[in-house]
Image (cartoon, rainbow, N blue to C red; front, side, top):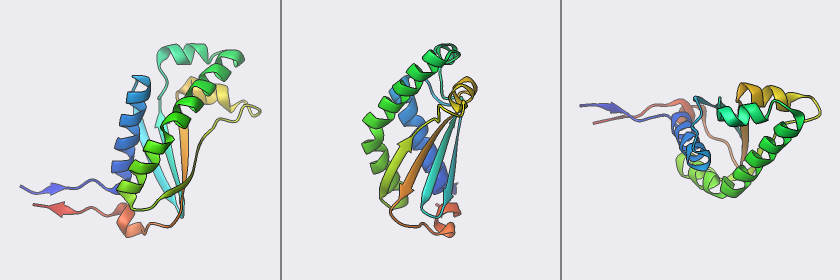
Length: 137
């Protein structure tokens, strides 16, 4: 029986989803992974629990939820860096998870349950390696 190995993007999405569920107890509904040159952007869709969405409906609550997720990301970014390097073969040189408060994006992002994680890689990954599928027996 032939099986198709997941692409790097699928592997990164799965790893990030697992990390998110382990950290919060709540899995994202979907994960989108986009690579552009040396920048890897991971979007966790509907990643907030119902309680977090309710709390984020006020500016003060949104700030609390934002800080909570910022701390969770900070505490686990080392493991995420290692996992991304294992999957891609390229080290992560910068990582950030941020929501811009002054634009009002915090409330919109939190109410929609979307979180964006950006990883700047130390090198490039070819499009063939990123998008390619390997067939195994």
